[in-house]
Length: 311
Image (tube, rainbow, N blue to C red; front, side, top):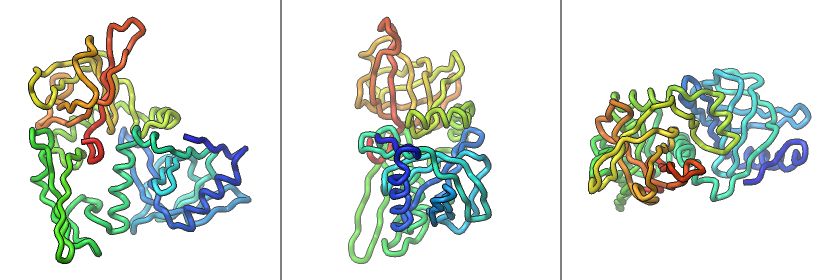
């Protein structure tokens, strides 16, 4: 990752934004409110170099939902992220300050941004009509791609067969896309409420802190004594309950006393938190098992919730 600060790289930052404007590249803008991201798809309209202002507009036909002063941006087309403050907003338009810095991302930075990239892709699909997806995630006819047939019953989260099949028919050809993507929208109302409750302690300040560390989803330390129950997906080993280390919309980590208990690359089911259990487990991929203290007594198992790319 390369960081451009306005004091030393102002001309380069202007070039980046000018390119985004000319390409009409979409960005996602987000804020955090009550532990949840509020997502807006936007375009940059023009840059006022003298006043250090950027004008933007909604990429959809709906008003921007901006409740706090600080906002975060991500552009996948040009691989950068930044945060800044809102100057004014009016319906589908807003003016923001030129950011003090822009972070140019490398390919390896994307590994920690899986959930944010997924949000971007969902928004891009809706805005450009290049597949399935709308605000309610209901069935949609798509121009230029044929008919997108979506059967919600094919979202079988947490079962042995976790595949959902999206079939797109276009002209005389038919293609199948097989994935194991987990998303809140495919969870039951009770499971969604349970997961949101676990995230409820994440604040805007925590989002800002994690932005500095380039983590895509807000992640906060849980209250002391919080536990999570997990099981290796094949069911060959019994389920276990472990201290929860941290949690975000993109992943989870917990503590174990033996580094042999889990291995990187394993798929696990997250069964519940404390005494509360999910109707259908959440699926996660073990990314790492690392020492959690200098004594080598505890190990932190870091997991990423399943997406099309890592399942």
